[in-house]
Length: 395
Ligand SMILES: Nc1ncnc2c1ncn2[C@@H]1O[C@H](COP(=O)(O)OP(=O)(O)O)[C@@H](O)[C@H]1O
Ligand SMILES: CSC[C@H]1O[C@H](OP(=O)(O)O)[C@H](O)[C@@H]1O
Figure 1 (cartoon, protein in one colour):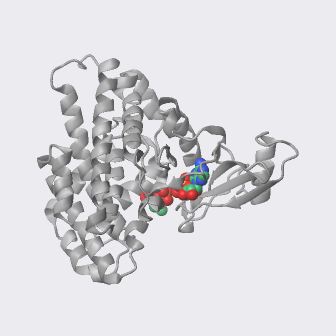
Figure 2 (spheres, rainbow, N blue to C red; figure 1 turned 90 degrees about the vertical axis):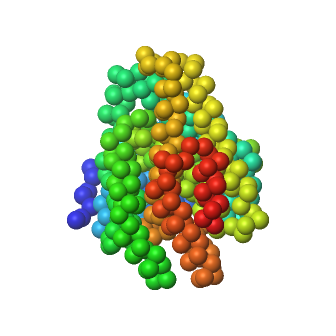
Figure 3 (cartoon, rainbow, N blue to C red; figure 1 turned 90 degrees about the horizontal axis):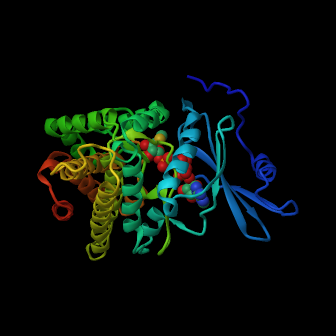
């Protein structure tokens, strides 16, 4: 397959990115501008433009017509840029404290111009470096409650939600997740990528019919359940943090799906830290896992009570049912993410960055075993304490 030429689209260079910033009037006319391409993700260009004297910056993110990590042999829709810009604006309207401001977007050029967050640190990088972000998981819990409630049937009403869901069909990006998270790691697929020392563990996984059946059910939920507008790729590399501020970036995978998916991806990426750390440094990560769920549950409940468009909102047991389902879904999705980032395409630095071969292999085996347990036993777990106990039992 080759990349189609798209009318009016051209990849930006530092010069054309600066010209765009000037045209948009985002800097004073006399300012001296510097531009660096800083994208370290799998898919896009990210240009950081700064006014050299005033130290003020902006970010211009541009989608390429292919996946950057693989190259032109993997064409990928440019529509993801408009999905990302629209999702940032919607999430920003419901949770303004936790989302970068969007200054401009252009569908033809596939660009989103947004607030510069480079005074913050990507949470994954900070956590790997041993930094503590005391408010991170409370903030993420609040962000999740607000975005997942306000975009749902309960927040919007059935008609409006269906309209929104139509505007957020994102089949190409969803297919990446369907393949890379929910399918390929459970079979002997070409995209898988793991060390030889993991072969036996991986073969056991491929022969585990019970895991495959539960993974199939989780994949079905991901594909069929349009509960709310999800971020769709909420790992700790998609979150900027400081001790007091949290901002969620990169929602190009946004679509209407099961709300446990965002919660589960975040929990799994915290779990990578618990797995990678020495035992004495794990407790703070367990606290994060507890805080994100507790804050989500508390805030979601408040929103449900305040203004719910569903006639059944006050029916005894309905909110509990919704929360329990989301919790158990989240644990299953977390299990899939743990396995995928250990043996599938696109790993995490938390594990790959462990230099000692023996420690790294043990960490990945732990991640795979924990993933299997979460997938198979999620319906037996009813409290976040149960889930944390299960994580502890695998390390
Ligand atoms: N608003 C921003 N402010 C500062 N840096 C950013 C911003 N958005 C992205 N970046 C930088 O660019 C990197 C890649 O961005 P991301 O949106 O995750 O791209 P991709 O979709 O390719 O994964 C981030 O890890 C971060 O370093
Ligand atoms: C070839 S896409 C693989 C992987 O990349 C995305 O992550 P990011 O955009 O944050 O780098 C997403 O997790 C996809 O599954």
